[in-house]
Structure formats: C-alpha cells, structure tokens
Image (cartoon, rainbow, N blue to C red; front, side, top):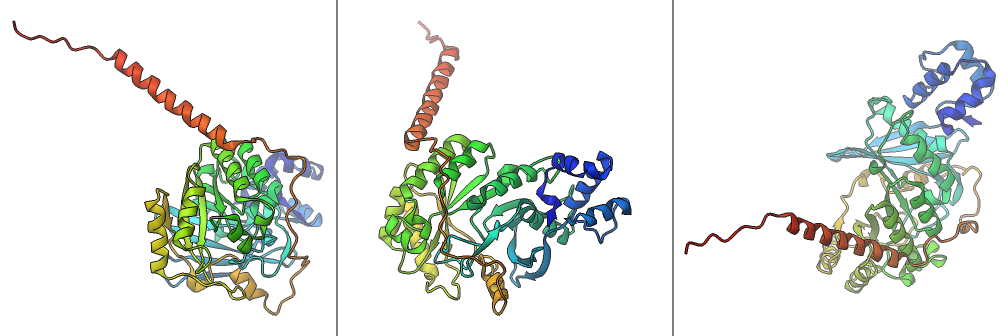
Amino acid sequence: MNILLDYEKNELYSMLESLGEPKYRVDQLVDAMYGGKDFDDKLNLPSSFLEKLSEFNYIMQPIKIRKAIESKGKDKTIKFLYDLPDGNIIEGVLMRYAFGNTLCVSTQVGCKMNCAFCASGLNGFVRNLSVGEILGQIVAVNRHLGGTKKDRQITNIVLMGSGEPLDNFDNVKKFLKILTSDECFNMSVRNISVSTCGIPSKIEELADLGYAVTLCLSLHAPNDIIRQEIMPIARRYSIREVIDALKYYYTMTNRRIIIEYTLIEGKNNSFKCAKELSEVLRDLPCHVNLIKLNEVDGRDLKAPTVDNCKKFLDTLNRFGVSATMRRTLGDDIEGACGQLRNKELQGEKVINKVNPNIKPKPNKNTQRKVKDASQLLKTKQNLQKNEKKINKNNTRKSSPKTKNNRGR
C-alpha cells in the first residue's frame, strides 16, 4: 500500500521519476488528488501514466466516505464514517458556523489514552493514521461539499477526532506542512487547532516547529487526583508539567491556549473544583471551553443539568477566568468522538487490534527546553510592560508644550 497523499510534491518528483514521466505530469496528478479525484474519475492524465501507478499499487484517495449522517437540527452538523484501505474505519464531524465550516479530523484508529468520558478508546488502539489518511479526510469531505482545491468548502480544521495527535507526532507534523503549503490548500495556521491530552515534550516540540496553531488542552480536572481517575495519561504527567509546557508554547507562539473541560456530574463540577481550576490557570493566558458531558454507552458517567453547568461557568467568571459553554452540536447523530465508529463495530471484528492499555512512552531524545516556563513567561510580560512605559514616556516628551498666555 503506497498512498500518494503521504508525500510532498518534491518527494513525488523523485518517486515517480523512474516512470519516465515529465514533472508537469506530477503537477497534474497533485492537483487532481487535492481536488478529490481518483482513478475512476475523468482525469487530465494519459491512461498509460495511470496504468503505471496502478501497477505499483499507488493509492490516490485513501479515504472513502462510508456514511454521511446529517443532523436534523438547525446547525446541519454532519457525521462522517470513513473506510480506510486496510478495512479499518474512522470518523469525523463537519460543524457549520457563521464564519465557515469546521472539520473535526481523526489522527489514529482508536486511541491509547482511554479517557473515561470518551468513546474513542472503547475498542482499543489499532494504529496511527498516515499523513495521507489524515489529509484525505479533508480532501474527501471538501469534494463531498462540492469544493475544489482552489474553492475549498472547509475553512477550519480541528485535530480533535479519534486519537491523540501528539502521539502520532511525526505524521501530524508533516500533515501540517503539506496542508499549509501553496501546493495544497494553503490553509492558515490560525485556522487549525490541535487538541491534546497533554504530552509535555511533544507540546514543546510543536512550539519549536513554527506552526502557531491553536493548541487545545484536554484538562477536564482541577487537580491530579481527579484527573488520574478519568484520564490515565495523568498518571504519567502531572498538571504542573503540562501547564509549564503550555506556558512555553505561549511564549514561543504568542497564541492563547484553549482549555477543554468536560463537566461530569459529581466528579469535577463543584464550586471547589471551579475555585481550584481558577488557581491552576491563574498565570496561563488561556480561555476555558466548558463542555457538557455527552454520555457514552459503556461509560458510567453522567452529565450535569444545564443549570449546574451555568453555575460552574458563573463561578469561573467571578474568579476572573475567561470561559464559555461550548455550543452542543450533533447530539442526534452521535457526534461525540468514537460513538459512531463504536456502533458500526458492534458485531464486526476490529482489524489489527492491540492492547488498549498501552501507555505512551516519553521520547528519551527530547529534553525539556525550559526548566521554568513560568519564569520565562513572566520575563516576557515584564519586557512588554517596560516597552509600553518607554513608548508612553517618549510620546509625552515629543508632545508640544502649551504656553500659559494669561493677560496681565
């Protein structure tokens, strides 16, 4: 299996040089692929070239839409179920907003994290998605909506579907490079969000890449005790370690962090939890997205009432935390991560299934770039304050003085 969307254009030049085709053939091929075209479509390419690609088992479109279920609500959210070349299935969600269409993209088949409130880990972790399989979701849905490479119908991307993006770091890194390139969709990094459970070393690596995407942390608890009960990864990394990495990310990118906090009745939605959360986030430039739990079959957790959610939000706001309740979309189409896939897998065999309890191993070659990210952030903020004072003083000195012309 050789997925053409896995490669940058320059890599394809080298790969396909042996086929004896001119470079402009690769240009035509790339335009066709990003436009969602496959071998069965009418292509501006000679049949001899396409036959050569087929002989070498090259795949143009690794993502096939198995189901597209549209919400009956006013938001017109669409849940997609995709087939992969090896028979596995993944899912994604298209959310429509006033500013455009946002596609929630998966990065793994299943998930190692096995968070207590999420359906993605119920069937265990199978494998990472390749670069082309991540990108192919955007290509497939864009074509489904009638979009093209030049006139794309997807304005925003969130890596927030099944899987932990930073656990598939190398492929996500290359995906970002291709997605933002002129050869592909030329998408701005400001329209891309990456959600993570919190792997400090990878957060720092992402900060050093230069792609200032919006980083979203799945926090979901105000302290390590509660977080360890609902998120196994918290047994490896403390909240303090993760927050330090986020401060480093902010320092390097100047992008405010988004904190994702799912409200679970009797677990993390008390007044005490709100107060403690405000203290944890005090020195971090961030905004909190509160999410009412989307109850999942197979998970013994309950959602709070709307009134209780509002009380938690009001408490955070009173403590000075920037926070809002996320608008609920796609409840009637099982819009939460992993729900539709799990339903589809009932009675089916999961391909290449491995142990769901595998924990992510830290990258030993990656050293922490900042020992005290809090101090670095404070230094930056002090420099900004001093710069404002200097500019203010210079403005006063340069202003012409008004003489007092009293009559005598």
